[in-house]
Length: 260
Image 1 (cartoon, rainbow, N blue to C red):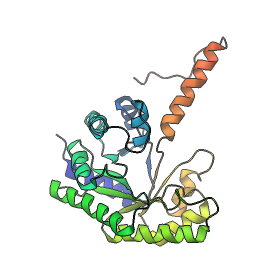
Image 2 (cartoon, one colour; image 1 turned 180 degrees about the vertical axis):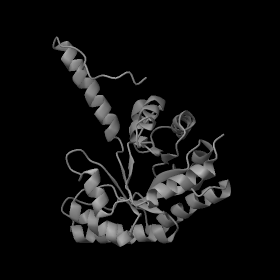
Image 3 (cartoon, rainbow, N blue to C red; image 1 turned 45 degrees about the horizontal axis):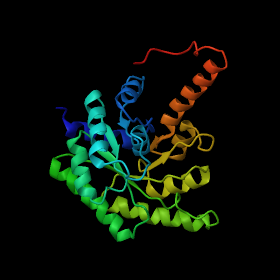
Image 4 (cartoon, rainbow, N blue to C red; image 1 turned 90 degrees about the vertical axis):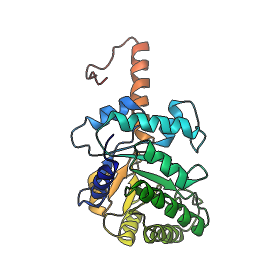
């Protein structure tokens, strides 16, 4: 059994390091092994959307928690790196879900606020952190606010950012080490969030065709960039393209590597 406390400390240090932490999200054992075997990878993160899709479920806690946790446990057992789990909104009991995630081998995790009343969202953060303490580890909670993601198309962006900052700071004050703000893709907005939260505190998701490059994100002060379901979509795009090429009379890409 790996020392989860050591892995948790390593994961926290990676977020606080001057270099940006890049996490290509994984969804099963083979994707985890391929990513973990890539030079420079220092930690793994799962994607709830991708795990759910693997089993034929829609995202949003529609996959049974037992099935979700079973895949996370398989991933954690298959690699020698810290693993962070996307626990979504906590499946109705964030503290208990975090406890079970730790039991599955995860030492960190994303927790979305779903724009619940702030006091409820803060209480959920505190419950997850308490679960980590009870388990003897410093669970690396990535407190996610959906302020940008759920904002109306015509909403005043200054007001939306102000709400994201208000919520993010509340989660930091409650003890969360990092705040995740999906929907932050504009350089100016990312810079505002990074400055508001401070060094080593902001996590964003890489969106194809919209997000700045990893190098640019690092320059803007982002601590962590993950990919969510987009790495699975990269893999599926390659699969569909290869299938179409075969059906058109072509061949498999000569650059294909034996990774499994």
